Image (cartoon, rainbow, N blue to C red):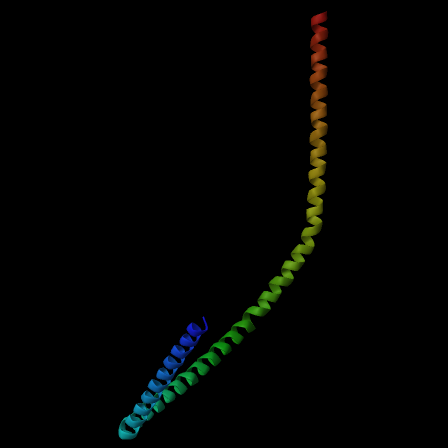
Length: 140
């Protein structure tokens, strides 16, 4: 088991050493190319500066656009928020008036129910009275 672990560790070490050697060789090759071809390096630097300049311009444009949007939003809020606050106040006033009206509606519903019950009682009594009168008429 130790021999297997030792073999695995040696294999990993050899693989890591090979990767490191390959990385160094690629880096050296890239350095030689840069040193041998200064015009390519200058061109790459010029392109990088151009990209940086474009990115800076886009960032400035984005900040200007954000500033314009913020201004528009502030102007819109100046118009909308007072109206919104007024509507909230009006809603509060309506809610304050609605409370007593709801209570009164509840009272009226209870009174109507009581009258309907009383009417049903009277209708039952009238029906009983008519039945009794009919029975008496048939009895005589």
